[in-house]
Image 1 (cartoon, helix red, strand yellow):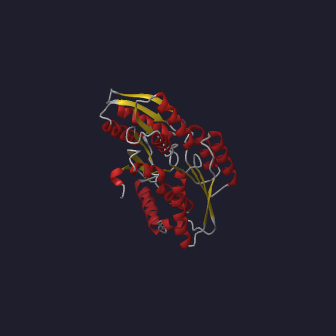
Image 2 (cartoon, one colour):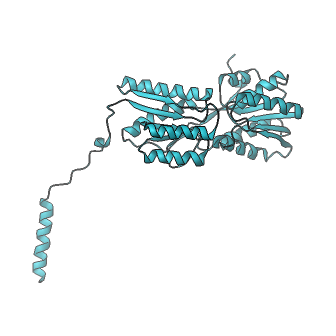
Image 3 (tube, one colour):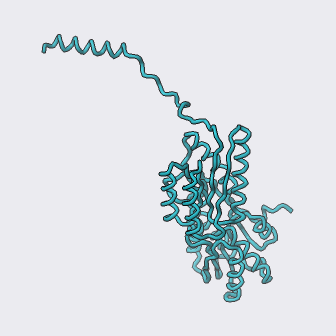
Length: 318
């Protein structure tokens, strides 16, 4: 084949390319799916607890916003009465069978929860993780690591005690990643204070009554206790009740998590020195927003940090 013939073929091919209809750019708005039916979202938290009532309030606010747009959402809360891994997993598994439009899980046990959450995704369910981090595979709303909260509270307690004294820890649930991480951070903070000694550490299983009785027993065993760290929303309240009943308010320094009304009251009367309060209302609000977006085929962030803030007596309004 001669050079001239090859050149002619190339010219013909090029001309054909120019004559071909132009490929249309994809209209990305067409990727978004309209919501034309009622949606059902299921929340499976770690336990029945007033802390999650605030999450539910945020979710309800988002639902009302969507109702004003003509999008109806049914939110179901399926909560274990106690922080029991087997019970929570049974609820997650049962809800996979119900095929909701969205499933929001607060992990109580990462390993087993993640297995079931992967099954939910395979079944075509939109899965969100909130409150306690599970795995990078799922969009998460909350503090990915709670270690900083524990560290901050440990540092604050050490400053209040002048770096000396015997310390007790109420450790919540031993499988809950956020509780475990807070204790890790708390202990790291205390490493800088060799004259602070942890003499008591027991799980309360996120049950208020357990926190009260554990603190009562600890006060009997360690009458010279200087400070108490509570790793969840229940145990600072339980510790404060026991300390106040023993007439030790202000003498035993208590630090802990979250801003449930009774805990805030104890801050304002001086029984609790400081709290790190999460923004769990936002967790519920954004969980609903993101599950709607997933149903519409929008992209969503894989991590939404809702953060936390310090509360002390200085924040109380007289």
